[in-house]
Amino acid sequence: EIFGLHPNADLTFRVKEAMALFKTLGETQPKGGGSNDGVSREDVVYEKATELLGRLPEDYIEEEEKVKIRKLGGMTVPINIFLFQEIQRFQAVIAKVRFTLEQLQLAIKG
Image 1 (cartoon, rainbow, N blue to C red):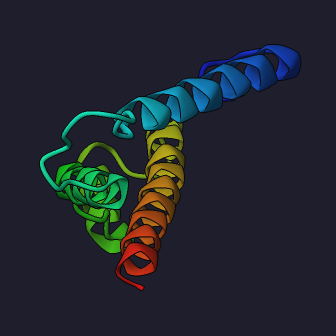
Image 2 (spheres, one colour):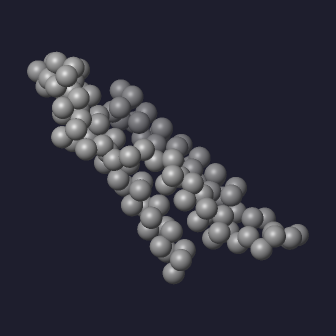
């Protein structure tokens, strides 16, 4: 819905994005044979998760965002309502990604 795609096109888009993610994850795994300098695939994934966690933006605090939107004309302006809804959705994505990466790191640690 973010891009205004038809539901079937949106599903296709999401499937392609997921496949690209899995392909990238597969490419990060060390290949068999030869020396790997003592780096296991778990180490590679752990470092990638750490890198991604470092690149995530800070959480959006709803009350702070409401104050900023009030300065832009308040919640009576349709575009501001849309902006606030998108901030809420984006925050949900950020929280889910952060949780998943942290859980991945905990799983690797054992």
